[in-house]
Amino acid sequence: MKDIIIDIKHQQSSHCETGVVSTLLRSKGLDISEPMAFGLSSAMTFVYLPMVKIGGLPLIAYRMPPKAIIKSVCKKLNIELETRKFSDQAKGMQALDDELAKGNLVGLQTSVYWLPYFPEDMRFHFNAHNLIVYGKTAQGNYLISDPVFEHVVECPAEDLQRARFAKGALAAKGLMYVVRNVPKQVDLTPHIYAAVNKTAKMMNGLLLPFFGNKGIRHLAKKINKLTKEKPKYQKLFLGNIVRMQEEIGTGGAGFRFMFASFLDEAAKLTGDKQLQAAAKQGTEVGDNWREFAMDAVLFCKKRKDLSLTQVSEKLISCADQEKSLREKLLSIKAA
Picture 1 (tube, helix red, strand yellow):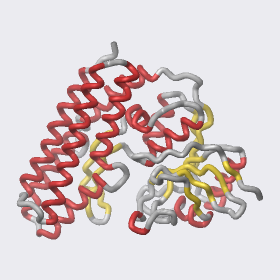
Picture 2 (cartoon, rainbow, N blue to C red):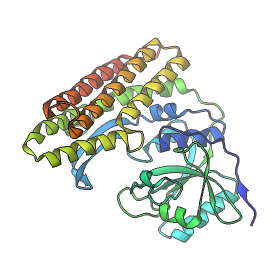
Picture 3 (tube, rainbow, N blue to C red):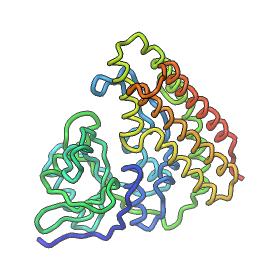
Picture 4 (cartoon, rainbow, N blue to C red):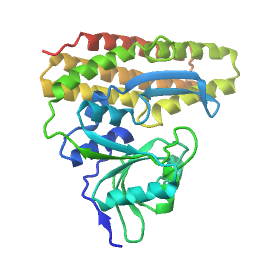
């Protein structure tokens, strides 16, 4: 067997799924940046689900579920995307080899824990990491463009198989996806305004108090009530928020910054100053989320004389800012 190497322009990215979407589409000649992919998919959100536990602590998310970005972008831009899952691991690996033999880049959803090229301190049981396989060596190693890394990497076949079929929450079940065709030309302008409007509507949340702005305020109330809990649980709870906000994927503040970048790019594309003003406001929202995370860490480490009420109030200020940004976005109309 000879080496299979498919041409790819690797790009290190802020977030795995948006990075993979951008790389796959650019390889097909459609120049979609990572922030543009994120913004067009209206993926920015907030979810606080106290009834769903990970490691005994509630789930907090700052974006739509895994695969929502690539599916939404492809649907909106009329891009032909083929996705497959497998119950048989051998068939899943053979399907990957078959696509490579045809000269196709293949997107995969994997576990981070079983990818040996990740440093030990970055490996944890997270099953929704996205990467691109762009070839295979004669020795059987897969050639991978992983958005997390500056350079392309290699992975032995047995490790990649374990990563694709790891059990647990968000199990990928061998998920692979291939972009078959993209339109020759796409007018992004109408999609930009539609995505801005949809994101703004989603920012208010659903009827239940766990989503969007309502969810942020619900979590702030919970933080205030932690005074009734033991100090150890207070630290665990706040530490969990910071971990989910700052360490998993791009995190809460990071997604706000990426949305602001989308608005900035959209403003340049359309010449719309309203979008430019919203981009500035979006950056300020991200800054405030990062300050909230810092306050939570300072409380946990007792590095600053902060109370739980003050940490809660900082989170409420994030909700207030997002409400203001939402109103700004809703006021933006296409010229």
